[in-house]
Amino acid sequence: MISGFLISFTGSMFAESALPALIAVGVLPVVSLTLFRTAGMVLDMGTPLAMRFLARFSPGRLLQTCELIDIALCLTALALITALDVPIAAVIIVYLLATTILPLVVDVAEELYIAQVSMASEDAAVRYNAAISSSTALLGFVIAQPLGAFIAEQSVVLLLIANTALSAVALTARTISNRMLPTTPFEQTESGRDRNRQRISLRQKAVFAFSLGTISPIISGSLALANGIIGGYVVIWAASSGSNLLAQTGIGLLCVGLGAAIGPLTARHAIRRIEYSTAMITAAAILLASLTIALIAATALPSHSTATTSLTWLALLGAAFARSAAMVLYASARQARLKGPTLLSAIGTSRSFSAAGTLTGVWLGLTLAVADHPALGLTLAALVIAAMLLFMTLRKGDTPIPSTQPLSP
Image (cartoon, rainbow, N blue to C red; front, side, top):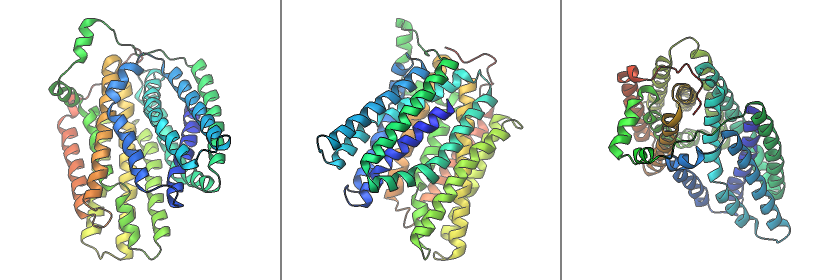
């Protein structure tokens, strides 16, 4: 299952890297990247509605279907470019928009898959999530995106062929995995009583979100909001103070990538030694400390100095480390401690909160000009994490204990 995900992820990163590459060479406008990412986040906000449909199918089958759809779309794009001579830019835009829904389906299906095969063990869930999160961080920052951008600048056709081949390999891996560990649908009953129960008010949704303690969807929303506010903006600000913009940007992205890769592995070891809520609170405290260090660098030190840049890179490494560790712990505990309709509702609400937080944070970061003056953005991000830390501390006792039975519907 993990190999299938990583192969598929690499192919997706190859395809997505075509967009910034085409922007860099002037084929597409910069706004196309913002619009594409916004479309993806808007779709993620509708996850609770999508869950009602996706829960009817086996997670393993859903993953296989996504690979088949991607292969079909890649082959169609190749035919349009090579046989019908349709402009490459138009084909890539249509292809990326057509595949925007696939990450949502894949992410939900992967989480439901892990929930079933982990047999309600937090350690097993953490192992799966840590391996996936750490590997995707390395693949995304170090291998897939740079290589994909290079291939796209040489030949978009070659990029599509590579994505098709990787999707075919991923389909094979997912098929073998699904035969070895078959999964069943998380079907919800269609009785009139349960249908009425699904029509809950915003107040009831808020009560549900607060009731889960340190596995509340509020956690994912807060992490996404803070990350969206600072995002790549702080990297741009810190890099602009150096003598070599490209080299400094590379160092900043490397720090973020390393933190995102190491965090999940640390979470895997931490959950074996300390209780989940304590681990989450510790990760949140490290994240708050990292944001505070970045704020000090932005306000108390000279703006164009080696010390400022170095301290900022250290802070970003710590922030990426803590955030990635927290996300792995959060997803793993949710998969191991919830089941049935409660798990489906938690996944849908969490993804919706996360997408809304990211979308809000990205535009806030842009509005506050964090890339030029990061102090206000860092302060706001720190306040968000401080509030999340307070919430987790107060609601620590409300977190459900691990289930002792497999998470089957």
